[in-house]
Length: 151
Length: 151
DNA sequence: TAATCTAGGACTTGTGAGGTCGTATATGAG
DNA sequence: CTCATATACGACCTCACAAGTCCTAGATTA
Image (cartoon, rainbow over all chains, first blue to last red; front, top):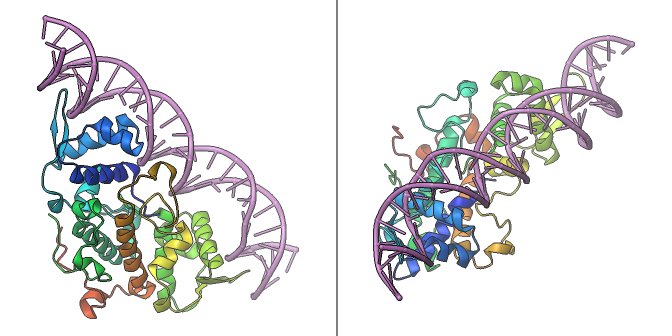
């Protein structure tokens, strides 16, 4: 459990691929390389482009390129572009009333956990995915600094 | 995404409830309190008992009790008892080859993220779920993104 | 012995992830 | 100009699995 969707997986693989590749790459190219259904890969890339993580070039010899440097795009960015906001609980937002969970006794603690996860995802950059170099800071257990807070 | 299953939710709620309640509680009792389908709550509790997190007392006036103290049971324990091993990727274990992902380029980095998440879940105890004491703020064993979550 | 509880297998159902198809549109090469 | 190659995107299919139900058996107490 707590698994991320295959689309998100594909997205991360594509991003890592693009982070390494100098020029641009087409959906088909990436899809074939990693044995991902082409149509699906295309959808994922389109979504990433729409969210401003990739720039697209239409037409023959077209393809996708990272919109920013790989060090400027976090894993959280990618996942959220594909799967929407990362949340552990069913209650999607903090101000949410989840009907039957009005009396929920674990809501707040779970949000803290959720924050930890989001923080971890926000600190890991696509560049680290690409060249699997454990970034210096990374060795610390959980040491998550306060104040990441995407917004 | 990255949401945990409802069963896991229910399990955590039940554990938190039991952590507070002095004696034992029946499945029905807990289910009704949190408006959870009784049969389902029962199944969840049975599972927790089978995994050694709860002790059960059969028969009339029976019910469930925490097998250990609430400070000795982590959120990870609970989730894993219900949903199986927590893993971010499709590849279930480290030594696994996920067929089509033989050429996976993000496997190892994702494992690191997965470890961070598991670590966070392992460090949060049921006791913290129960009395929603923001451990992070108070004792700061883990520096959580405690920023004023103002959505 | 009746009521209340856990134990657990078998079953049904609803939903959404995963994947496909069709079509429109942009672009470069020959 | 036109063809091959791309992206763009909505609509659709399908099938596994979470979520929930049902049923029966066995334990315990009053």
